[in-house]
Length: 199
Ligand code: ADP
Ligand code: 5GP
Image 1 (cartoon, protein in one colour):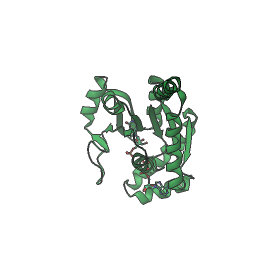
Image 2 (cartoon, rainbow, N blue to C red):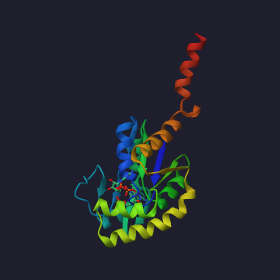
Image 3 (cartoon, rainbow, N blue to C red):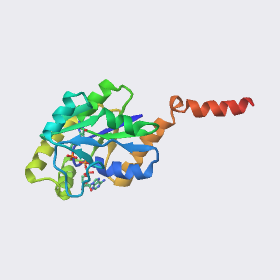
Image 4 (cartoon, rainbow, N blue to C red):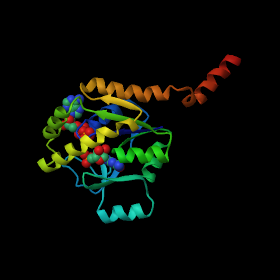
């Protein structure tokens, strides 16, 4: 199953996903391509594939992206190759913006969409400033976009409010675990159990 996580920048998506990946086996992170510059702590191939605008345009023209969008003035996209490589026998989690979430829902109807919000706009502002990864101008753009993004949240299946971190991680984990417990996801396992009842 594909899980799409979206929400305003600074709301805590990367933090939650990082915690989730250590808390839940069988889950892979989809590494996006982007034209934005790497932050000091970011590693190419782990956090993003950092590429030039020209490389991005060439990939897009070749139909390499399952979804792509311009976010805060930079290009971002999820490649079909990444989905194929990482989703084999695993659940896959995508950290993408609302435009990308919409494209994934349209193309791959099966995806589950999760919206992450901070408890308030002022808390979002505080977190973006504390993160120290964006210039004041970039923070202003991210906050403006946040006001628009939140209005598109009705596209999503689930809402996680990232107030207390441990609780939000637990909610996110529960969404994925509940999905895995659906009958239709467990047919193979159940068949074996049924067989044992007949033996
Ligand atoms: P996003 O990936 O959505 O842009 P981040 O995960 O980078 O957001 O989080 C933005 C900032 O907020 C980071 O400095 C992070 O450490 C902090 N943060 C995330 N979740 C919480 C939380 N529940 N409480 C307090 N600070 C948080
Ligand atoms: P950041 O630059 O802070 O890492 O991410 C900025 C925004 O881009 C976030 O909202 C993030 O979810 C989104 N983003 C990251 N990767 C992708 C992607 O592959 N596609 C789309 N549509 N958005 C992405």
